[in-house]
Length: 203
Image (cartoon, rainbow, N blue to C red):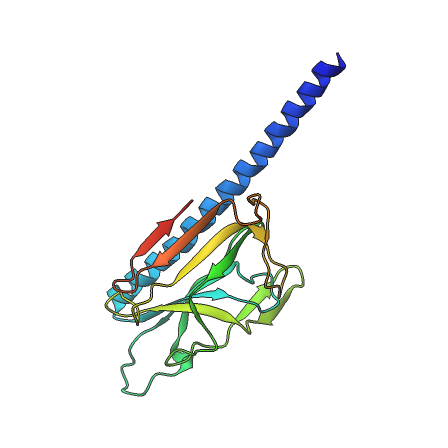
């Protein structure tokens, strides 16, 4: 009887572990789809409006949205002939945040230490737990031009994984990891520089 009970307990534990893994996989897949859709929307917006459209991800800023929050900004040509400034950037919708347990562990978007022309505006993020607006001190971005493409020849990417990064932390703690400590699953969004199209990489 004890042997049978032991087998039953082992099966139940394995079943629940599998279900939790599946749940994490669903969240990762859904988050990746949302971010890739934002990138495609940014490209379409630039083509349709003859505008610059930026896809921004919050970096190490000490907010709940660090490496989880994404947002679009657009810059349309002025009609008064005046030069464009950072105040001419306008947000397209609110911040989109991945669910708990899904975070970006790698991103080759341009850092805000290399500002765009004109620079993107000062940004804030509302922390729900602290119930306050925090300044986004660090972020990474990619800008789509009116022809849908990007500048340069390098194709930037962002990779989402199952894991956590404490606010301000640089190290990712993976909740789905291989024996060697690397991510067991990921959703990588690549933006092709030549035309701004999105290419997805999965393991």
